[in-house]
Image 1 (cartoon, rainbow, N blue to C red):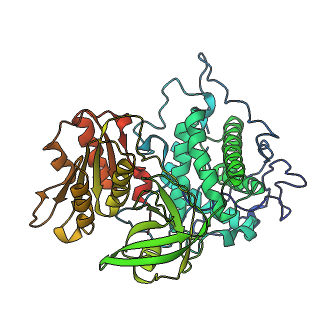
Image 2: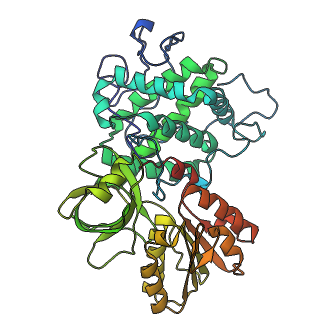
Image 3: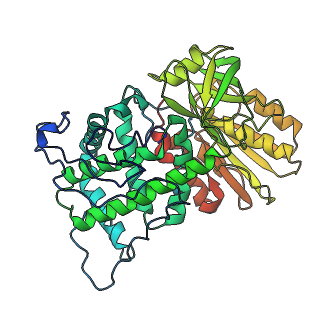
Length: 498
């Protein structure tokens, strides 16, 4: 979700939206013949035929308080026939996966779509029930809904199109995932705020402004009105307006606060480029100003060759005295950014960095050991965590299981073994799934079961989505509680792109 989720101000084309100082949200009321043409143009046109409730004016929290909480669900009433998510972003030009790219974390660090997400558990607020029913209805046609949303956005607000990458194929998936997340968290304002604040800060690098949110809200409501025919009602519309109002205000406030202490992005010069294998490079850059981050975090990165296309990469070391930053990058098929960084980038090139993000960091207030599983280029943040422990000077046991398909793919094993020789509290075990090896054979999670016990350890996982899923299952199965297992959002890793 790391591309502009919001875009230029509503109302500039005379179709409604904000006017004057912020103004109130009003949906566009175009005639059917004005509706955007797209892949589903043969379907019956159902552009909004009436205005929706106003979405709050945008501004800052200091000037405009958050909207009232969603109404509690009545205990003795039958839920009405139904009907928030922040439109997100980040759109890879081509759909593919990379072995390890760090995404913006999704709350709970687990899949956004657990079983029963849309079920009525009797405890959800009325707004949550209505929003989740809308999501359940549009889920089978998510591609159509999101395609129509972007068509509305770019036809009614054409000046927004340049803020997005040229290709929009994965953008649709990212929007629906964000809506799912909001539907799940709509009743948990604390977690929702934490999640959306990160998005608000991250979206500064796209030039997102407060006045851009009404345009997105108007088009989101327009798309839902058209496609959620079985569940849409006045009550449902009101629920979505309240949800989007809260969502946009959280993101606006987070961006405004972040603007006081950090730039929207950093320029960084490539000062080192080491090809470790034909498709893996260690890229080192020097930011143009101090870049604060913590070991285990990640950042978004844009190259000069693919403007507006941002991808996430972990920092491969703890913060350094010289201020340099390193990333491990694997070029993947059809990966525009990763291929450019591995095969095209050279010292002297300048890239852009977004703000740091992520919570896979060491808790230095405890003496718990660290159990680290790093698969492929997922070893990068694991190496950073080891350096962080070393710099704090406490002899905490750290057990690293470094997985790859073959010995040849253990591209950073020499570095890890040198660290183990320097620190008696560190153990590094290479694990190879295919072919002969001098280390352990088999799957990474299976190798972990052979050792232990791990009751007094905090677990860290970094690597491909499949490894993380199986690793989490393994760690829970051997007694490590969920709150002591840290990893990236699986849902985001699956669609991290190139």
